Length: 177
Length: 175
Image (cartoon, rainbow over all chains, first blue to last red; front, side, top):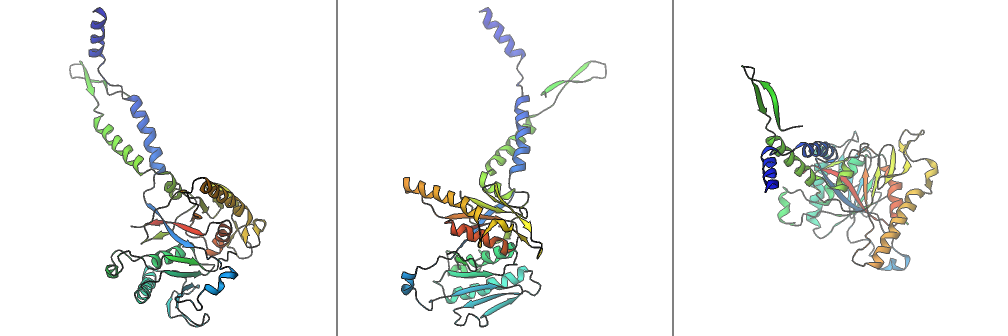
């Protein structure tokens, strides 16, 4: 009984919760998490490296291909070749970028052309991209981004509910034997 | 730190007990810690927070990165899963970024190809034991937005020759 009485007295006198360790942990944890947190979304764009056709399977490959969309990006323009019979000939569409820096308006112009092509060939999904070696990686990424999917606010989305433009992108000029 | 104590004296010189109310601060800290822990995710955070690499900004795509190996290319070094594989130099001929001549074996980077080859072998071995864990040959390319495409070509070629033919290009989503 005497012991119990002592405990009660201690509880009444020492009623404050010691918050020091809790606050210490919080103050350490918050700067660490703030430094390591990312405040933007990291996303990924998919592109494939071309797979060579084995010589024994060459006869199964339809020539000329039923659909051939090539995006060539030299320093001063974005050239779009659709089923072009002459690979050295002029492109069907070209967006001029004279100072080799791309504005959003030029990229949107490219996107609109790609949407036009998709409407003509709704079942096709393949595209070959051939960027100039000096092209900055950001521009390559932006061209891939605008080639893969419809914008969510594009009115054409009602005809293409899966929002797929040409997601099967192959990188030209990266020869992998 | 204490939640309360004797901090002052009354007008008559009597000690006055002043309590600091820590409850709102603790509430705030708890909410902040929960939010930060929820948004903390190892792989995307590693991609986002590399100090030498500024990611490209894109508008439409929203696909999230998966758990695959990451090849990072900054203006100073080429890294595989955070480990430096090769230095990046400025080519004295044209002033462009490049790899040292000794790094090349033909048109590919031998050190990167052999390191990726080991990862591919492991992936295929895991697939042989557990067919549900397929080796997809996917790799994340995490490169600075200012790097020219020419520097990435040998990286892509080496990846392709090591069995990684699907490139996942990391970027900063605006939406």
